[in-house]
Length: 169
Image 1: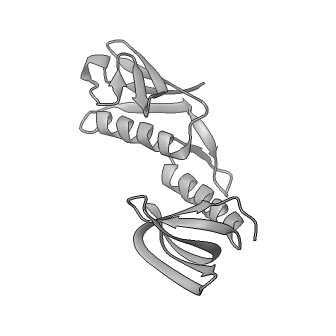
Image 2 (image 1 turned 180 degrees about the vertical axis):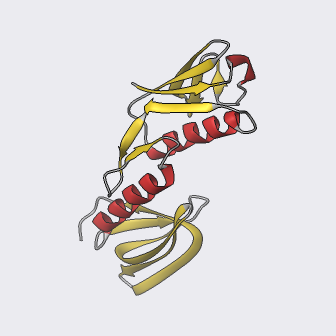
Image 3 (image 1 turned 90 degrees about the vertical axis):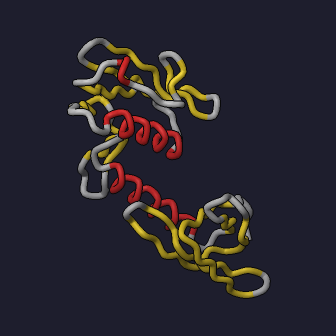
């Protein structure tokens, strides 16, 4: 179980539409449980969340701490490492870690059958992933080229999602 402690905030100051009793929930899944006293709040975080769930939890923590003079202790909330060996946590080094993971994921998808979706989740096309362009702050895919049965197709958008189809060519 991962643990994140917010010092300088009590549980009564925490409000979020994702907070149900002592649990932070998203899509009917408990992402974390909260315990608190007058001086701190402890988030006990489910250890097997996907990237979107970590992102929701991160956004909640940033939202509830915004405007408050707090200290966030992430010593027990390490998610992984960056390419340079530096540790990555839910708050500290988050963007760099997300970029590192997403770039690695994209490299494994090169030459594979993929499905392209826009920011609304609508399918734009599918085929073999030939190339892509990314932005890193925040991480997003802004362009990609697929090889389809009709030839090359290029897709440009503010935020594209590339998903494997798990089909082999």
